[in-house]
Image (cartoon, rainbow, N blue to C red; front, side, top):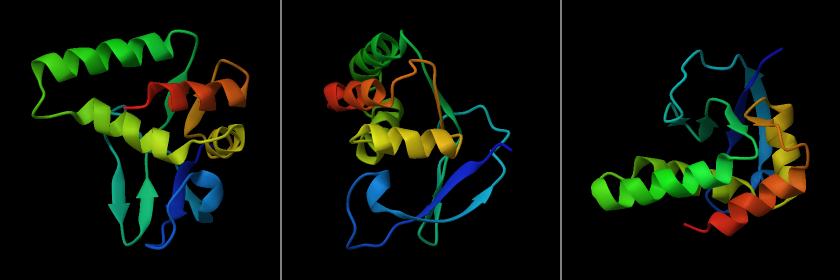
Length: 121
């Protein structure tokens, strides 16, 4: 069953997915827009994101384009910052995979975590 990640964030908690307590599940949004993030009453919901061998290059290129041509509306940069905030270690990726938020075609959760750490926007 496809799921959308639902996490409750407490103001005193700051950190990756492994530091946040899950509170439930719901179907994945039919939206194909990565920016369909919702934060309501302490619950973050977001659509799935596919990671494959070209993802890091694609992200770096699209962020460079955005910073050069649309510096006043850095939507992609902010989206990547949110994922980077949620992912610090392979276990964070594993949780997001289980919740169907990340589709990991690299096969190694630690590689995905390292990729987001190295992006460092």
